[in-house]
Length: 325
Length: 285
Image (cartoon, rainbow over all chains, first blue to last red):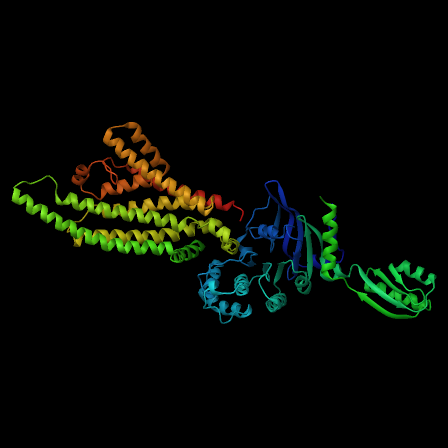
């Protein structure tokens, strides 16, 4: 089995803050089917945490365990420093389920009022907060309509409003944009950014990599019910940076020296070669250029290519997929 | 208490169902026809009286027996409609919401799962209590105003009819934490039917002095005490004369269930409700 990729830079960043979510070997078995094998992760308070994985990797089941919808077969977890199911913690948590269905005979306002009551909010608090969240999710004029008459996207927005009604410290969003059009997705990204500014921790479960990439501080990729990779987004993507160097006349010696510093993937052209190399970080690019210049090799162009989350995801999930089973 | 928030929503939700409205419309229709029926009965009785006076014979049938039987029919209908409404309203209240996913946003809120079950129970119970009280009132009002007859022990009788519906509600709520909506409907209606048949068999057994048949009735009323509680209600709201005159019959009884049976029925409700809470507590959604 593969090792979990924990990046050294990741750990201190997360551990200096208090944890909003901590799981210790969470496991869920349905009959003889292991859905979540061993989920161990930590999300610092105030982070936007992307939770990724292919279909059937156990993402939704993991969230269900954290939300008290399914009982872990083994392991434990703490939310906001309290054990699962703790009411004080639940008071400060918001949740948008993947399968969002509400009492659609209520109007949007009545629905939010009901969920506000479940949080024990006073009438005055509800009166103040309901128009606020309706505004936030972009439904300022639809509060009086029955949820039944809402479009799918509007229903998702009211679901998001429901998850934010109590001014939560920690929000779990399970596929929050599945029913939204591109504009709606942008709105949700803006809402998440705003939550980040307010110091709210967001646990974002999504299969839309570009979405996760654009908002998350840290991500975890899970496959087969365990964490395959976890770390700050920037580190994960920078880890295996490639760089394209367009050079002037270079001797084989020069390239050999360069090869000691970076991993040369391929060289195109002989007299004025273009070298594609993998480098561990930006610093190494600078050192490579410095080396070439000192050896008198003209450097016409340096193009670093950051990997996208998608490429990283395919790498992690792809190898994992072939290794097991 | 958060259970009351759930109860309030459940109460309001019940009126979103066409079936509940159907029962309500039928009930209004019934109340009107019932008053008219009582009117016909009174007219009929006057005719009988006139004939009797002409013939000079004073039959043993008194007006009270007839009026009491009429009240019995009315209350039985109320009891039956309330039972049906209870089962239909609550049959998918947990399983259906697990399937549709509405519970997914409710369970993670700061409330216990038991409060969700209790809230639903209270929501349905309050709806049914209001329904039964209103319907019994309309039956008794018809008897009073149209028939100039007042049945005895109306309050006790009403409480027992409420108990019948609570037994069915407990059974239905317990079932919906385990079975799918469809399966629960089948199971609960089978049990309800069994209880009614068992009660009938017991009456026939009493008539024929057959102990096996009586025991079948006893066992069925232990499994589902709804029918025996109805028969106790019917026994109490009739004058003794009417009970002895009518004898063992499909709707009543000459051998009323004891106070222990009532206590058993209440305990039965409580235990099923606690059972529902326990099952739901451990259920994965």
